[in-house]
Image (cartoon, rainbow, N blue to C red; front, side, top):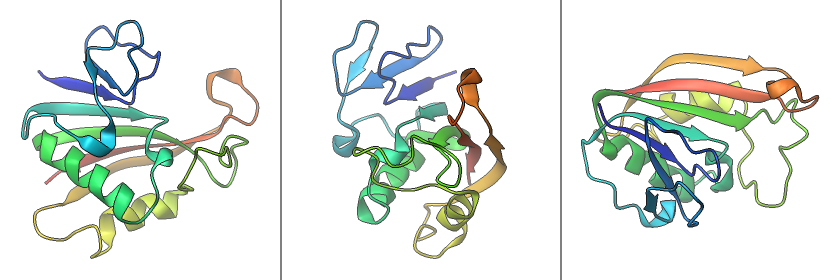
Length: 148
């Protein structure tokens, strides 16, 4: 089973291929997510924890989501954690370029803009997490999408 941890930073996972733009200890592949070069139809699972908010919500995010879709096998899953724009104190950091809510996740997979051609996901789950890791104000949206 092929699993990627994209934009992993220092969150290295032993059972995954850890991908980041920096050469942190434990990173398996150095790659800028805007210059994607992971093999198509290679992944059963992609983890994107605290990375998708670093992309503008238009073409920038659309391109990253399309690349994730291309990399996943049919039925493969994207699991993501993003700051909840309605609750998280981390939402408005200077390098956060998109603001996530549960409605934004639904729009991401339900609107024609993101469902062009074969670029389609189904929502498996969306949930709001409060005080993640016991940190007050560290509130995330956790979602899982499946490639159709």
